[in-house]
Length: 388
Image (cartoon, rainbow, N blue to C red; front, side, top):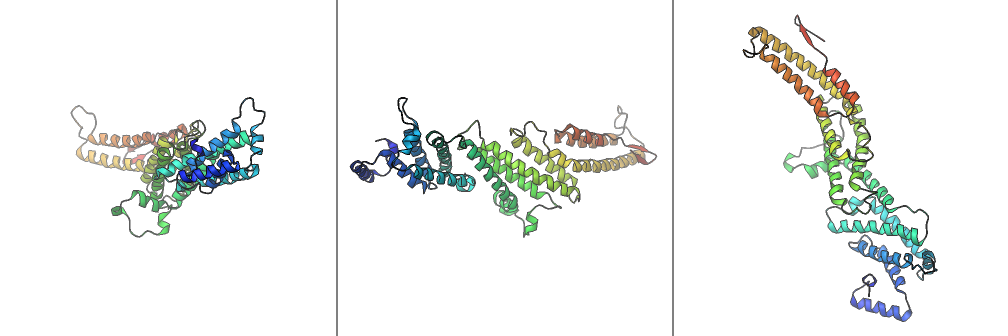
């Protein structure tokens, strides 16, 4: 007997076969009945694999007719003893339930459980089989494609994941990335969320987002690989996470720009972390490839503030150097040099500032132009007064 027609252990199968032979029960009726029963237990470990194989053979029975057959797949299905509408109802209910479970695939098919990851793979196969059945057997015109259904479900799950990361950022970060020794004391609920006097929330959120994208890439992509030309869970994860993060980060920085309670250096550090996130995970996402990334514009006010502060630091440095050189009689740096040692220090400090701007690697030439204009303003020292 073909393997897919064996539903029970040896003794029970013999009883079923004897009963079917005596009463003329067709094998396809048995298969559809067994599929209906399994559909009520599809979330049990290992069941999706059995259902996928069983449904593939049900599809083959109805859809793969011979060239000489005068009866269409739809007519053969309509003549089924199981009942056409009865089986359609089973599939419709199953399709709805599978969609719901895929919309929260992280919870229902955790990456830490290899058996459940296998179930996820076969769950998608079942959805694909349902699409095939609707198209070839039911002869439905343009049913939703499997890749489209899985993409919609995965997108919803990713939106749920981002919301969970955002709403529980502090606790999740403490659980997954903070050692017991490094944990803080009592923290209020207000301190756990985004604040105007700190950027630590966003730093933690980026870490959690990266972990989620990596999980999709390493754990879920190998099992959600049925549609290589239409669907890539790793790229979709990056796309959805970045889209939602961009909205929240942009709005938060707009609020920060009006108050400025954090140090400008903290904004620069966050700028670098977001640049790293974009270049490592987002830059290859198809929808973002032709676009100039918008994140540098979020930080422009803070970079300009940092440059202004560095101007003040440089000018103070210049004053001190001038007074020191004046006191020392403007001694040369060496017998071959035409300037004092403080001149070297001043230009070193200025070059370090310029190096930071270059390392930001801003992809927007207009913003770069404004940074360089700000940096290039010439400061002169005349009669003990700084002039710009």
